[in-house]
Image (cartoon, rainbow, N blue to C red):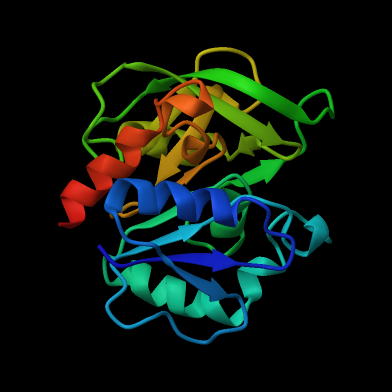
Length: 221
């Protein structure tokens, strides 16, 4: 699987994500700078990492969403290429219009940095196929603007169409209906606030995130 990790000024999880992808796939991803106009030819999977792109200036992800490379990411997503956005990457994908809703300041206005409980809401996507439906996971979060919000009609549609991938099992940031990760209508774009790349080997204290990458590898292969 040929993959690409998008790098913005302020990204701080790009290397973590690249390491996780290489560990699972055996092949290092291309590190693509945000000013590049194109993705490497033959890219099978695109990852948008966490961090504080552009220092979260204006709104988290707002400036990164307008970087030149995001046009190529949107084109690839429209053709079915899997795209995963984690934390700030989730914010970038909503700001770019690849996913609905918005990520607001956390309830209580505090930065949240700890391991939280997740439940797999949809195990039928290319990102979650290695998990069981309703399976519990423990995955770290580290965000200040992770409070997912959308209007009631959008939330009902996400739930009705099976596009909620993960939910928090506890109060974390005030997200509507405890939503922690969502899919686009085609099912090939996933945005999630928790960091699966931080739980891919025993040295991390857990491996609950590893199967996301393993399932994706199998689906793409």
